[in-house]
Image (cartoon, rainbow, N blue to C red; front, side):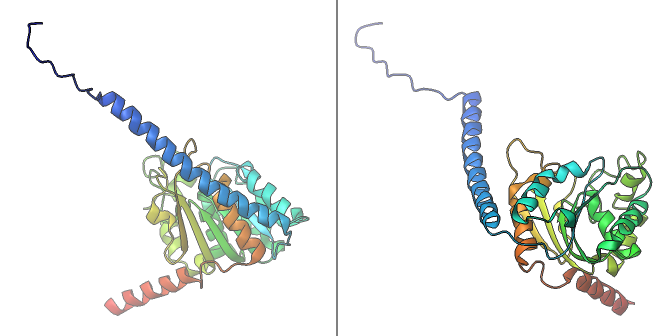
Length: 271
């Protein structure tokens, strides 16, 4: 170094990899904080319900999705039994095992639940189509439907694998089953509350948010699958239990059926 030469200290350079790492850590902190707050609120609501036990007004039927089972609702059932002691006989989990089209499953569900009379239904994924078909074609009496990620206008990727299974073919948005289901007012002549997690890869928002229903779009949680884990989400469980045990108003009127009538009236005017 020659005399008199001036060397300014080298400013630290931020490596792009380091920037991405810091951004990822910041996102984890923010998401974790939001998750903690939402879960604390949901858990507090569930604790309040547990301290004030009540009875279920009517039987509750739980319908799982494709390639799943009643175990998907085990957490929800445990909270129900805690908040509504003695409700075991009013909680009915149906099993959709077996092959065949959705209509066959719907007929079986309607037959099994016929002795229950009017029921509240909690359905996940394909189970929503089964429940609506059971009400619209086979006479199942539904008071309210709590729809968890239901593909009401078709699943996102059903058209890619529709040859794999009859039930997947029925979930294709272009299928005859979906068209007939959504043109039958009896399949939506009840109050509907829908839930979906942002980023659900299998069900789009427009498909999950059934026209005229009360919709809840939830923040996606870290380390949880958006579609699969929705029935175990404490936020969903807290809302549904409050609705079941306190008879809170849900969905207003049967807005879905009213919307269908308006669509049909508009089509007739065009003709």
